[in-house]
Amino acid sequence: MSFSLSKKVALVTGSSRGLGFGIARSLGKAGAKVVINYLNDRESGEQALKKLKADRIHAMLVRADVSDPEQIGSLVEAVEEKFGSLDILVPNATPDQPQKPIGEYDAEFYRQMYDFFVMSPFHLAKAVLPGMKKRGYGRIINITSEVFHCSVPQFSAYVAAKGGQIGWSRSMANELAPFEITVNTVAPGWIPTERHENDPKEEKDAYLQTIPLGRWGKPEDVGNAVSYFASDEASFITGQTLCVNGGRTPW
Image (tube, one colour):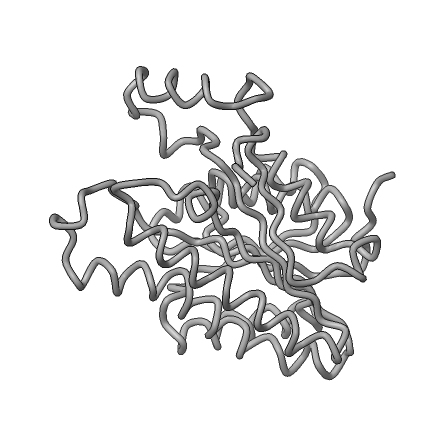
């Protein structure tokens, strides 16, 4: 079955490359009009826009810092002005996530993780929910991570923030269900993208050995999971987390 998102409008934050771009492309191929967002790398954003248009995807590129409530408000206004609605929200933007023993982290870094993975989805939701509630329809799909489920060590700031994002999503799912707005999360494993080009080969090889399916995931694997949650076929599913990691999650 091919999920149809025709006549829907999707915003994917942090989507000029990597997993974000893979998600945006999957949503676009399913028929959605797609808004790709970037902050610093305009060239990557413009290249992403060209790639989507080459796939005959109706797309829009917007620069915005999605940790800034004012810029989020302007971003959502621009999308609704151009497309008339914003039906699917995918908070995906992320900063660097260095692994360190807890003694080497500082409070400011913990706050940065919280700002990106809890406060940014909160501000984005506040901006899009009036329109979603008015239309009686909406999809919010947070991109979390397997690190929370796998209890990854020396990653405490990122794990804590992702745990908060998952908890926030579950609470919002119950709160927004009466408005026919679903809230789910997709939790990828380590899926190599541009940002992983210089990661040590021995670390990649070691991780690959832990994937039961015996192969690396691809950005479109995450995009397909997001497209499912965005579709009408998932209209009775909310408050759930889908791990996209080849079977690594220890239940």
